[in-house]
Amino acid sequence: MFLIKGLAFIKESWRRVNIAISDKGYIVKIWRSHYTNRYLFSQIDMIYDAKEYLIIPGLIDIHVHFREPGEEYKEDFVSGTKAALASGITIVGDMPNNLRPITTLESFEEKLHVVSKRAYTDFFLYAMLDEPEELSKIFEKFGHIPVKVYLYNKKTLEALIRRDLPSEPIYVFHAEHPDLIADHRKASDAYELNKLRPIKAELEGIDIAIKFAMRNRCHVHITHVTSPEAVAKIVEARRRGLKITCDVAPHHLIFFLEKINPKSPLYKVLPPIREKEVNHRLLRALARGLIDIIASDHAPHSPDEKSCSFSEAPPGIASIQFLLPLLYSISKRMHIDFDLLIKTVSENPARIFRVSKRGKIKVGYYADFAIFDPRYKGTIDPDTFFSKASLTPYNNFVVKGKVIATFLRGKLVYEDGIFLDKMGEYVGNIK
Image (tube, rainbow, N blue to C red):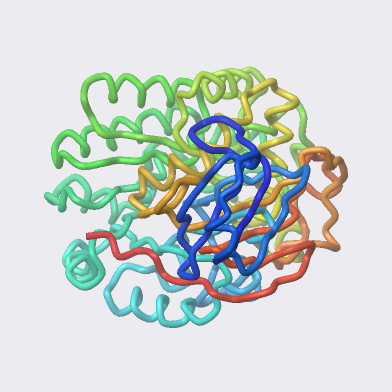
């Protein structure tokens, strides 16, 4: 049996406790540190003292693009999951828009076979809504895994409108209406991209998602919302009894057009960066608890790809390795409750995406922890990146807080830049 002691985030509050962990990686007992339990202590083989650091539930990042198989020069499951562990992330959800999109049972099985051998974190995979008959085959074999819906794909939109689809999966929408957006390559800077992919396209896309949720009586999740109007529309749909949730990416919380270099391809992302006024109101919605999840939307590209002109550069921002420090920095700079932000990257994604026994520090749950130093202040140094995406808008960005260590299912797998074990498993069999 293993014991970790320190200040832990439990039941939405901070408590100085002892946490006993079984050899199988489950939390078996939690008790206040000033009490002595001689029997339990007699069973302990090793103690980890977190001292002045914080013990946070392992983060769950539901939205990453690790590019494997097909574009490993951008990222792969080794580099991506290592970068995740360095930010206290213990579970990732990898998107299906690979070079060969994950639209069939064959492509899903191929991807699962390849990445299962390479993961340092636990993970689940998405399938893409494109061929409904193939989705049924995937569900039959692997359970109701999450389905990604790219509305700007005409074939996907057609399948969505014309077909009755199973109600059991969670359908995750990239909500940009195809009739209201233009090719990102037509934009020479971030201002033009914002006009080519306007908030109106997001709102019309959410309307489609809401109608789909009503017709199929299913759970719809809107990913990377960019506007408070989108959040308001989602909240109103919830009030009408629909099962609809949403997430926001850190770049839409941190950056706004008036703050960035609009010509820099490092800020090119879809949906695009919005204006300051939109950004500030989105932060207020987050502070009020109206946004369920924060997800990195880690979209890595090679340094060469992010060094060309804005119009030629592929869209996407890499951020997974510093997700937790970014959130802590947001909480301090914007006076947003850090406890609330912790829930958006642990408890809420576990509940919404039905990842069993994760997301909380609770007896019977897996012992997934991030050990976090809140007193640290420094800059994001690309020389320390484990991700292959070494060009990001966060390079040399000042942050508060640092992940010291990460535990996965009771095992210390990362500490001070060193990876101690590779034990990632697929956790996506949702029945």
